[in-house]
Image (tube, rainbow, N blue to C red):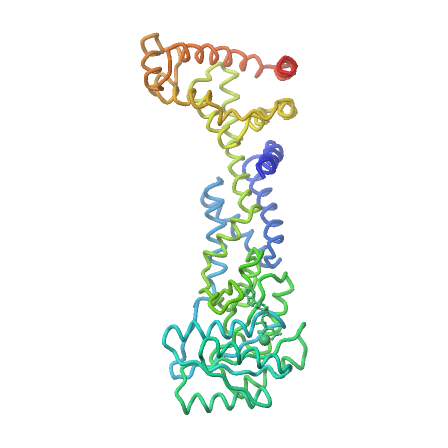
Length: 442
Ligand SMILES: Nc1nc2c(ncn2[C@@H]2O[C@H](COP(=O)(O)OP(=O)(O)OP(=O)(O)O)[C@@H](O)[C@H]2O)c(=O)[nH]1
Ligand SMILES: [Mg+2]
């Protein structure tokens, strides 16, 4: 895992080196495009998203935080467009809900889940078995209804079941009627017709489309056909407990313009949650690929810093602040290799270094403590540091004076060496030195 991140950082740095910030952003956006597509976000939506993120990042100023902020905001906006979340009651009961969706998407389970959700909120719910394609389907819902202790009704045909349910609801004052319907493996005319007839007979306030979040891009097209025929008013994403990235939600929300209401998070009747845009955003951003993009943007910025530092090294004005910045940089990148590959022209040298993890070595902690014990002026100009100041630094860092002296010597030698290497032909000499050291070590 760690190696993978480092590798991608390294290659990002390599890629980004020769571009100015805007070109680098373009590159990162291209990576974002691929990552979103991989997360099953619908291609049309991806295009719009990228355009928005680009504009927003530029407005804020190119940088890691700004890129992440722009991305988060855009994703959130895309998901929240359609408004209402959760359940909405009709002004006059009963609120009638028609459930639709492909076979196995989770309609029957979700019907029971919503019933339970409403019952817990004190509502009187009637479940309607209108999937009469299979006897087992009616039985499945009947059992679920019994399990959560809500009433159930069915009939010979879907329309008859719907009409009987409405009559019962009026007579016995039910608050909500939820009609479970049949699914097909793919959309077909007969299914749509059946749904349409049930809809005409029951005039539902809500038509919920139940979508399996594990399905890919074609889920959007399917949902669009349902929407065109029976005018969906809400979407419920099921199987969100699986490996899905949630990318499909982004497409559904923005392509249909229909609000996502609930998310199914398991097989049990209690596994239903209100749809919250932030959750999907977090899930998408947490999915490795996209998270590492933000890192790439930060490497663009670090690249700029690295150039400044190289300039300073060449002028011989490299000081403790620069050194600390380098150490921090190393902390971010994780190992020495990455730092070396930041030095212009030193790309191949990185491979010659072993996997030295300086950041976590005790020595690096000491160095950091020493620099942090210096005054700002001392950090700017190492020559200011007299022996008495050195002992103060040693005290501040909790080290012996010998250790501080050794560090100063190393720093001076290092700065001198760096200056040499930053000159023409320096990299070759640096490389020779490194392989020499590696041989000695081996
Ligand atoms: N893990 C998980 N499984 C779910 C979820 N929702 C439904 N399922 C499972 O998905 C399978 C199909 O669920 P059903 O509710 O029968 O789906 P359906 O859409 O009614 O299917 P048909 O009636 O055949 O069209 C069952 O095994 C459910 O337990 C969910 O949110 N998470
Ligand atoms: Mg079913």
